[in-house]
Amino acid sequence: MFNLFSNPLYLFLSLTVFAMMAIVILFRWRWGIFSIFIWLYFQDLVRKFVPGQPSEIMLITDILVFLTYFSFFAAFCLKTQKIWKPPFLIGFLIFAGWSIIESFNYQLPNLFFAGLGLHTYIWYAPLIFLGYYMFQDKESLLKFLRILVYTAIPLAALAIFQYNY
Image (cartoon, rainbow, N blue to C red; front, top):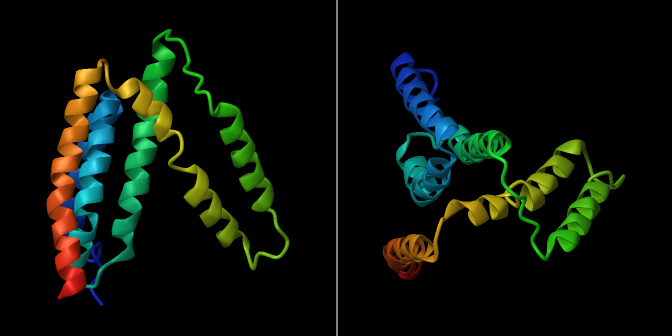
């Protein structure tokens, strides 16, 4: 079985690319959002073309999200901006609290399932706050959404083609 990190050249190239991306994300958190979307588009393609389909590739998304969170909160602490309080904040906090309480369910086989459930339900939720601060005006938001829609069309066509053939 092929291990992506067994070859020193692959390891060096992977770490170099990751380090460059991490440095850019740490200084500009908005680039982290863009890199998350770009990675989500190409994640499965990369996973399929790397021999052995290593599971480490699936963790890159979580690492990108963590770096983006860290960079955003560091930048946010340096600026004195008013904190956005969404109208659904109370409902979300109740949901998050309930998810944490349910993670201590005694009928779960082990704590791995509890952690996986918390990851699934809560890990990506703070991206809502980053999305609020991401765009300075409505035009840049609409431009970003147009790009997402235009890039989703070929992916949808490919999915339909793969499903039918």
